[in-house]
Length: 599
View (tube, one colour):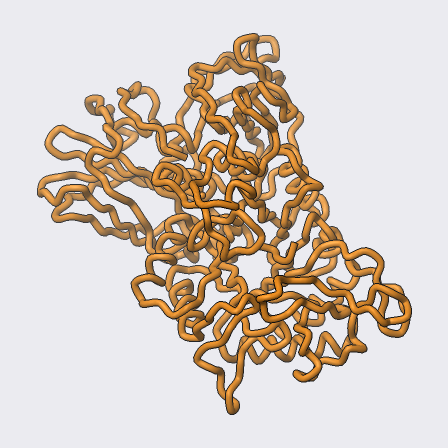
């Protein structure tokens, strides 16, 4: 446990009802005009890709879009709608020439908002559509979407650019630079007072200083933050030759004879020996080393790692050490001397409450292990973190998928990935999973499993959805008592139960946000899908749902990352005798319904 460490978009070929102004399947039009003739969208027939130049934007900053075509033919028209939730902000039409179309849009200047751009491209009687999310937030910690890098060997510019551009398409706004350092107690190797061009990391892998620096610069160019990874209490066996005093250590016995350490493979550089985070001398030592690191490399912050509950520990002089309670002390001392962003891993939630209440972190980060094994536990952690922080800090979960499947080469199991992401995203969190590859183990360079093109495309839609609806999912909603009910045909439960649809609700700005996650065909309820055996759910159509409320309802609308690229769709509903009824058009993995009330 050494370290805190990707939806097939459903094909759409449907004619949309003209009454549904926010349907993704129709031509765009000025909402004051009569809708034109219906258009059938043939998904993937004309378009190759849609991207933005940054993962997030400051208010007042232009968003640069790039739409790529499969065939470079003249005469096509792109109809574009920009939406905030289900409301159209602006529409425009652009003529396309060549193999791509590039244009800019200035979103409203409001801080901390999510948007969706719907692009319908028509040419010679054919039509295709792609959507993309846009995050306008000056503070990356408000809606964190955390990724990682774990390979810093010598590589060419094109290789590095492709990695960052891929993460940018998922709107990853912060990157953890995992195991980039020389030693934990000496992050950069120095030669004659200058940083060395390269060194070996703890696993004796080659690290190139220029690769680290180039990745930081590339991340900054895409509006991402670069986070320098290191433990807060770790050093090599040779730490004393670098000026570390063993008296600062953490010990397994009151007599101070057995220093706590984390064993690593024999072929690695060293085991990791632990030091007391509350010891002022250790604090001063490591913070000064990190200051030198930040002076040398333009990192934006420190991703602080730990190793979870270590049991009973003592200082060298026999004082009992409450390890979790030492974390805020260290982080506050570091913040005072080194004013950068901080994120700290809570391994299995160890120390999270004190981190949330007392430490200067941008958001809460939990590495999820066996003490939280089921889907419901993922929501539990996110809810608990919200309580710990007074509903102020959002959560990122490092939750490793297909763990033992990845003991051998293979492919990530798509249903397992999407069900877990659905639970995390619907609950208001995000998932540390995307880097050069995708995470399956706590040692980030491990990459036996590949991401299929199908899963890659589906995950793009999930992350677009997470961004476009961030003000409902993650902008500090509160718990709602609204409870959805199903029918004999489709059972809906407010608990995560195998064979049923799990539904829970939250409230934001007077709206109820109701989530539906489809476990009807789930083969198991453990989120990590350890052996890659989770089954794909059969898509359900026209799922009847009801909720009880005496408040007069004005609108009911639906959106899903599995349906129409996440575009919102107004739903017909009835309200009689305190019961509101509607039908979900389609339910694959995850649907969201928003209920708005008359004022």
